[in-house]
Length: 629
Image (cartoon, rainbow, N blue to C red; front, side, top):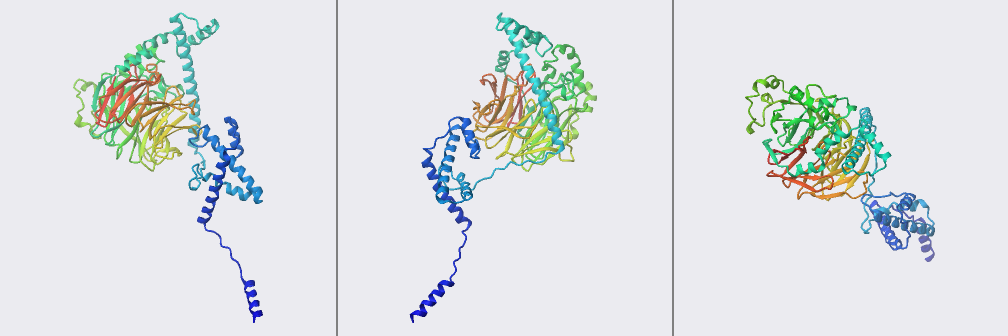
């Protein structure tokens, strides 16, 4: 009986088949994480015995040999060396396991992709995030714009550097003549004399005139700044303010306009508020002709023609500061967050248009409005000049059909649509041909001003992403080559408009960054935000820590550098804050010159008027517009 039983057992064993089931994705991930954790523990033990190069160039070459990035976000030199040490330890363990187990190299190479998943703290493995840089085909309009920007920026930078060189040589000669000292050889002195007297920007006569507006005198004037005028600007809080300026801080012949013509344009102030309206105010007596150094010799002859020119363009020399000159009650359906005024460009601006204003709102749109002369006001200007009365506060929100008493008309000319979230800031390019907008959709966009209209939704030239958080502040380089943007993650990005690539980025703010501004010298960038500090970055040394100024006790809303004209020469910086004050800072040593107190609440915006008086305008949550000088 035993024999048959044995035979049946053997038959059963012979007929049995073994099935292998594949593990689930969760089991494979747990197994890979366990192996990576064991490898990380072993690598930490062996890392102490690994010899790592010390020179930065050697460390960079070693990382390249391993196919690793040279520097990760936020790393310093010590962190880079520690990361290289761990990489070398892991590869050493990998080679040993390859020799012991005699496995194919590709299997171990696949396991090596798990190593970056382990943090330095030995925590749980996290899915790797793949960062991919994508490129899109540029439309013909963008290529044409980049060619124009390249030519313009090169000419502007050459002009700016040459002006600084000649100014420095002239100041050396002027200081040497005062002190009666010879600091250089006779040949160098003769060469500098030829440069200074050869028709340059700074000759002996202009230096004598500049002596009246030295840095010390400007600072003395700024220290005595006080409240000169205040005006209710809206029935709701004012959120943004801007002033008129010359193109590039003095003009450039490359844009095809005559500097002597735009020198007599009136000084204007534009404000935007929570009611969605835009208003134009008088910036004071005088014109931009007082700020142009190049035409200083012809000032006397132009003063007589100033009144007639301003009257032709809708201006009036006898207007009082902060007089309401134009208003449009409904421009946006919701609050205006940013406003900017186009530089005076008579070569590309129609004769009947004084300037252009761009505004950004939380209604997902940006709008362009032209400021034109009110023909009915011009016809009756002489007859009603003596009987004109001041605009009452109750009539600030004037209906468009009843605004004939105002000097300027504000007419919408283009709607810029495309952002998926609320807009934050807006800025004109120094050429006046382009405008940039920022939004909560993590992007900023560049628009063509000349081809945008009411029907096409705006001509969008560039849609640039790259920020991980909401984008807020924006500012253009004075040469027109770069644009800086800020986000709520504390990052300041600088983009090259000529190539479309990120030139550099700055990290240092503890909280959100809401504003940024380039200095007229071209190599300094100031940023500020929710942490109450102003940081000044050196574009020539992006790796160096920024100059940090503990400026305010609350969020800083706006920054503005002094204009590059001869009367200001970028000598000071102004800032506004939610702490209810505006402050003036010296750009030479970043010391506080004056504190402007007068608003009853948050100061929402600040800007500077061109001219020797260095007027400063602020707008606040208390619905007022104030002039300081």
